Amino acid sequence: MSETPVKQQGTAAYHAQAVASFAVALAAVALGIGNLEADVWVRAFLGVAVLYLTTSAFTLAKVVRDRQEEGRIASRVDQARLERLLAEHDPFQKL
Image (tube, rainbow, N blue to C red; front, side, top):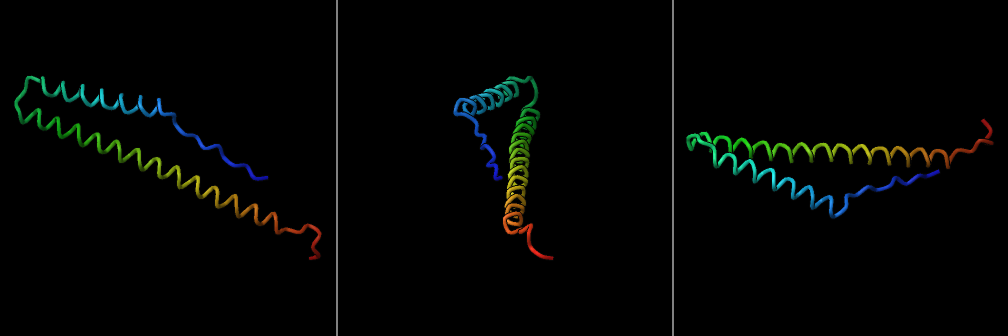
């Protein structure tokens, strides 16, 4: 009774939409910071803050993805062990 999990993958359109959304959001923030009526050091600080937030978001997404994959792999190993034990078990074996 081995059930192979369905591998879910995003479509090319979904990937393109995510990339486009990210690019538009980053461009809008950069444009907003550039047009802000403030000193150069304030705009530079906001620019660095946006870059830091962006890299932190990528790191967080990678960590969440890695944990999910790790859990999936551990589940597969446990399932394989259970299937092996069931295959080796002889219910009519004398105790």
